[in-house]
Image (cartoon, rainbow, N blue to C red; front, top):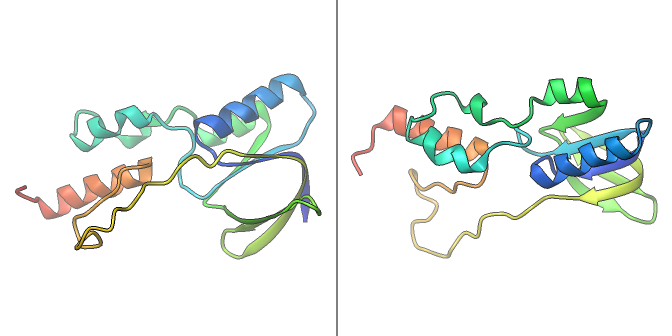
Length: 152
Protein backbone atom coordinates (compact mmCIF):
# COMPACT_ATOMS: atom_id res chain seq x y z
CA UNK A 1 0.00 0.00 0.00
CA UNK A 2 1.34 3.42 -0.95
CA UNK A 3 0.97 6.43 1.32
CA UNK A 4 0.63 10.10 0.35
CA UNK A 5 0.58 13.29 2.37
CA UNK A 6 -2.40 14.40 0.26
CA UNK A 7 -4.83 12.41 -1.87
CA UNK A 8 -7.34 14.15 -4.09
CA UNK A 9 -10.27 12.22 -5.52
CA UNK A 10 -11.35 13.94 -8.75
CA UNK A 11 -9.17 15.37 -11.50
CA UNK A 12 -11.28 18.12 -13.00
CA UNK A 13 -10.94 21.83 -12.25
CA UNK A 14 -11.41 21.71 -8.46
CA UNK A 15 -9.17 18.70 -7.91
CA UNK A 16 -6.33 19.91 -10.12
CA UNK A 17 -6.53 23.42 -8.64
CA UNK A 18 -6.31 21.95 -5.15
CA UNK A 19 -3.29 19.84 -6.18
CA UNK A 20 -1.55 22.87 -7.68
CA UNK A 21 -2.24 25.01 -4.62
CA UNK A 22 -0.99 22.28 -2.29
CA UNK A 23 2.23 22.05 -4.32
CA UNK A 24 2.73 25.85 -4.07
CA UNK A 25 2.28 25.64 -0.30
CA UNK A 26 4.59 22.66 0.23
CA UNK A 27 7.27 21.68 -2.29
CA UNK A 28 8.02 18.39 -0.54
CA UNK A 29 4.60 16.89 0.14
CA UNK A 30 3.62 13.76 -1.78
CA UNK A 31 0.41 14.38 -3.74
CA UNK A 32 -1.73 11.94 -5.72
CA UNK A 33 -4.85 12.65 -7.79
CA UNK A 34 -7.20 9.77 -8.62
CA UNK A 35 -9.78 10.21 -11.36
CA UNK A 36 -12.04 7.57 -12.88
CA UNK A 37 -12.05 9.27 -16.27
CA UNK A 38 -9.57 9.31 -19.09
CA UNK A 39 -8.99 13.07 -19.05
CA UNK A 40 -8.16 15.55 -16.30
CA UNK A 41 -8.83 19.26 -16.37
CA UNK A 42 -10.44 19.97 -19.73
CA UNK A 43 -12.28 22.99 -21.15
CA UNK A 44 -15.89 21.89 -20.75
CA UNK A 45 -17.21 24.98 -22.52
CA UNK A 46 -15.43 23.84 -25.70
CA UNK A 47 -17.18 20.47 -25.94
CA UNK A 48 -20.09 21.69 -28.12
CA UNK A 49 -17.55 23.21 -30.55
CA UNK A 50 -15.72 19.88 -30.70
CA UNK A 51 -18.96 17.98 -31.38
CA UNK A 52 -19.92 20.54 -34.05
CA UNK A 53 -16.49 20.00 -35.65
CA UNK A 54 -15.42 23.63 -35.14
CA UNK A 55 -12.58 22.13 -33.06
CA UNK A 56 -11.29 18.97 -34.75
CA UNK A 57 -9.01 17.56 -32.06
CA UNK A 58 -10.39 16.90 -28.57
CA UNK A 59 -6.82 17.16 -27.24
CA UNK A 60 -7.05 20.93 -27.83
CA UNK A 61 -9.64 21.02 -25.03
CA UNK A 62 -7.21 19.65 -22.46
CA UNK A 63 -6.17 22.39 -20.07
CA UNK A 64 -3.51 20.18 -18.53
CA UNK A 65 -1.36 17.51 -20.12
CA UNK A 66 -1.33 14.92 -17.33
CA UNK A 67 2.18 13.61 -17.98
CA UNK A 68 3.70 17.08 -18.28
CA UNK A 69 1.82 18.23 -15.18
CA UNK A 70 3.12 15.22 -13.22
CA UNK A 71 6.68 15.86 -14.34
CA UNK A 72 6.72 19.59 -13.67
CA UNK A 73 4.74 19.67 -10.43
CA UNK A 74 5.65 16.23 -9.07
CA UNK A 75 1.99 15.34 -8.58
CA UNK A 76 1.05 11.77 -9.40
CA UNK A 77 -2.06 11.56 -11.55
CA UNK A 78 -3.89 8.26 -11.79
CA UNK A 79 -6.40 8.28 -14.65
CA UNK A 80 -8.95 5.49 -15.03
CA UNK A 81 -8.67 4.87 -11.27
CA UNK A 82 -12.03 5.03 -9.51
CA UNK A 83 -12.11 5.59 -5.76
CA UNK A 84 -14.70 3.10 -4.53
CA UNK A 85 -14.52 3.65 -0.77
CA UNK A 86 -12.89 5.73 1.93
CA UNK A 87 -12.06 4.43 5.40
CA UNK A 88 -11.82 7.68 7.35
CA UNK A 89 -10.73 6.03 10.60
CA UNK A 90 -7.79 4.25 8.90
CA UNK A 91 -7.12 7.17 6.51
CA UNK A 92 -7.21 4.87 3.52
CA UNK A 93 -8.96 4.83 0.15
CA UNK A 94 -9.77 1.84 -2.03
CA UNK A 95 -9.28 2.38 -5.75
CA UNK A 96 -10.38 0.23 -8.67
CA UNK A 97 -8.31 0.21 -11.85
CA UNK A 98 -7.34 -3.19 -13.27
CA UNK A 99 -7.93 -4.58 -9.77
CA UNK A 100 -8.38 -3.09 -6.33
CA UNK A 101 -5.63 -1.26 -4.50
CA UNK A 102 -5.39 0.68 -1.25
CA UNK A 103 -3.67 3.99 -0.62
CA UNK A 104 -3.08 5.72 2.70
CA UNK A 105 -3.22 9.47 3.22
CA UNK A 106 -2.61 12.18 5.80
CA UNK A 107 -5.11 14.57 4.19
CA UNK A 108 -7.93 13.91 1.75
CA UNK A 109 -9.83 16.19 -0.63
CA UNK A 110 -12.94 14.86 -2.38
CA UNK A 111 -13.49 16.93 -5.52
CA UNK A 112 -15.70 14.65 -7.59
CA UNK A 113 -18.12 17.29 -8.83
CA UNK A 114 -21.60 16.36 -9.99
CA UNK A 115 -23.08 13.71 -12.20
CA UNK A 116 -25.78 14.09 -14.79
CA UNK A 117 -29.36 13.61 -13.61
CA UNK A 118 -30.96 10.95 -15.77
CA UNK A 119 -34.67 11.72 -15.96
CA UNK A 120 -37.12 8.80 -15.90
CA UNK A 121 -38.17 9.22 -19.54
CA UNK A 122 -39.28 6.14 -21.52
CA UNK A 123 -36.58 5.24 -24.05
CA UNK A 124 -33.83 7.13 -22.24
CA UNK A 125 -31.46 4.17 -22.55
CA UNK A 126 -31.91 3.70 -26.31
CA UNK A 127 -29.04 4.01 -28.78
CA UNK A 128 -28.43 7.60 -29.79
CA UNK A 129 -29.31 9.08 -26.39
CA UNK A 130 -26.31 10.75 -24.76
CA UNK A 131 -25.37 12.79 -21.72
CA UNK A 132 -22.68 15.42 -22.03
CA UNK A 133 -20.83 15.71 -18.75
CA UNK A 134 -17.17 15.15 -19.59
CA UNK A 135 -14.75 14.96 -22.49
CA UNK A 136 -15.20 11.20 -22.91
CA UNK A 137 -18.93 11.84 -23.42
CA UNK A 138 -18.13 14.41 -26.11
CA UNK A 139 -15.81 11.97 -27.91
CA UNK A 140 -18.55 9.27 -27.80
CA UNK A 141 -21.13 11.67 -29.23
CA UNK A 142 -18.84 12.77 -32.04
CA UNK A 143 -17.90 9.16 -32.84
CA UNK A 144 -21.60 8.22 -32.98
CA UNK A 145 -22.39 11.12 -35.31
CA UNK A 146 -19.52 10.37 -37.67
CA UNK A 147 -20.23 6.63 -37.69
CA UNK A 148 -24.02 6.76 -37.99
CA UNK A 149 -24.68 10.05 -39.80
CA UNK A 150 -28.04 10.71 -38.09
CA UNK A 151 -30.45 12.93 -40.01
CA UNK A 152 -32.04 14.48 -36.93
